[in-house]
Image (cartoon, rainbow, N blue to C red; front, side):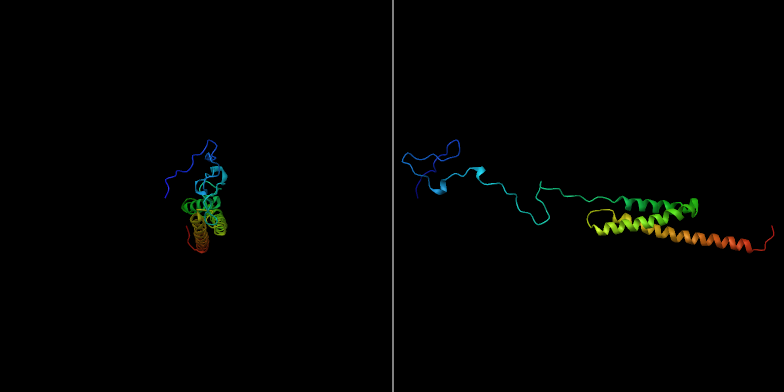
Length: 152
């Protein structure tokens, strides 16, 4: 083994040639940093490396939130307003919630509030059922009152 040091390099990165001429051995040749282009580390398909590209985050769908709010208001107004307001709000909550649930299922991972859509259309169904029961009870009370033979 020889104790030879690799030749020193000049300011521009080129090796200083010994006085006898010739080139230094290949293992001591300096390759400037700009000679090889940078290549980013390879990532699995569909996953960009850190700092590359734009990765969309999940978001909430406004229709899902709307259906849940309409369902809550529809159910909450049954004792206050009877079936009049619920007659409008519950079917609206059902149809908007069902539409939002289908849209969320069609784009998995894009929206985060699938539970709100499902809650909205379920509350819409419950509100529709309670509205129908309320209308039937009101009609029954009117019928019983009309056919009763009580004299006041």
